[in-house]
Length: 178
Image (cartoon, rainbow, N blue to C red; front, side):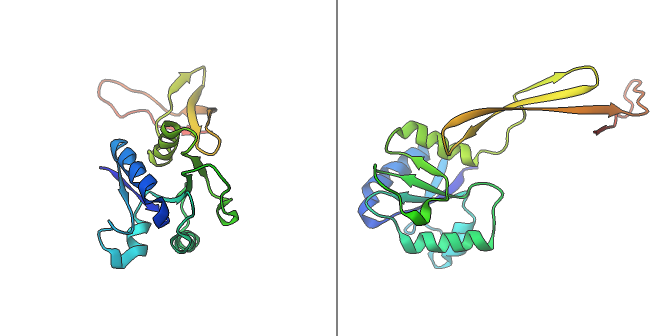
C-alpha cells in the first residue's frame, strides 16, 4: 500500500512541485495536493491521514495551509516527523518554519527524495544481532533526515531465561529483559 504525502505549495511553485510529484510517485508514494484530495471539503481529515505534510518552499509557500497543518499538529501530535519543509530553491526559509525538519531538494534531488521516503518507512528490524554469554546486542543504522547523516545505534540487553526446558514441540522459552 502506498503512503500518501500532502504537498503544500504556492501557485508560483506549481511546475517544480509537479516534478516532485512524479519523483515521489516513482518512489512508491502517493502525492496529494489541494487539487487532488479525495474529499477536498474535508481538508483537515484528509491531510491528517497523510504520512507526511510537505511544506514546499520555493519563491514562496502556502502560508494558510502551513498554518492549518501546524495547528493540526498541535492538536494531534505525531510520534515522528510529519510536517517537513522541502526547500525547492536556494534561499532563506521563513522563520516560522525553522523548527521543522528540512529537506534541501534543490541541492541534491535524489538525496532529498531518499530523505523524504526514509521519514515514512516503518521501523526496520535491527540489521544485526549478536548473542553473547547472557546478553543480546542489537545493532541498527538509522538515517537522520535533518543533517543527512547515518547513525549506528547499538543496544545491549541482558536476557534471562527462567525455568526453560524444551523437548520436542514443547512451548517456546519465555524470557524477560533486564
